[in-house]
Image (cartoon, rainbow, N blue to C red; front, side, top):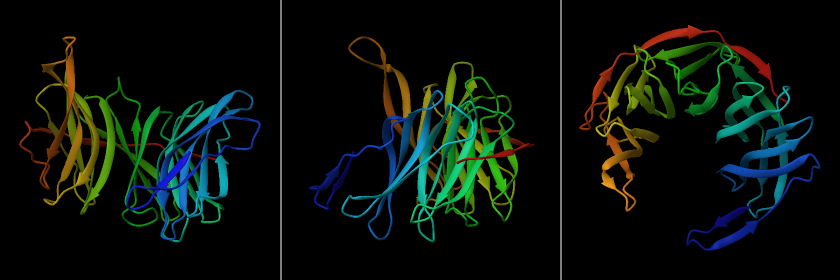
Length: 303
């Protein structure tokens, strides 16, 4: 379903719709973006029964009054895969870019471009050496010099959680840069552009049983730097945004043993970390050593 509210919070219209396809068992929308003309692009997943059970990507365009203009369903050439959209952004010439990860029978990330009339443009599917992917992150405007693509490995037991994709002028992948943190493992969850750098944030296990928030600064030129923050020993990052000090503001949650629920369990509280341009903060910071490595990349097709 989709509900549009006016500036006063009143319901302008509400729509409920389904996919008229006998193979589709269910569908859900997870992301939305509105273009300058008031059209709305909805991005989600359809559970499909066809030679097994898979989850395909669905993209719908709605007119400003809520009427559906078109819907596209995209899937890979590999049976029983799951396409999970992580985000959507507007193309400069109209239409959208959709990006996310693919799991199950294929592990990787996808980038899908559609024009305003629903024509498929870019249909890229990337796989870094067979790794299992948990997140795909994108910063900057797609197709510009600010366009940066990252993928996050499914990393509860590995030491290399973040990868940057490098493309040539035709949009084809050249290589993947792997960021290493001296054997620490964890997950990066968000990224944003800040001036001449991209900052990715996540949480790494800096010592056994001690998980801290980590910010990784990747400048357009020069070596990367990283900083860990935390005092409770169990922080989890959620999102990041630029701030007025040319640094970042990180939000997330942390387990606090000193704050007990009525059942005697520790509770989770929200936190905000505010940094300057060098990632310095008042929250128990600790510099981390970052090294990089180049890993192979393969490209497949998406339908």
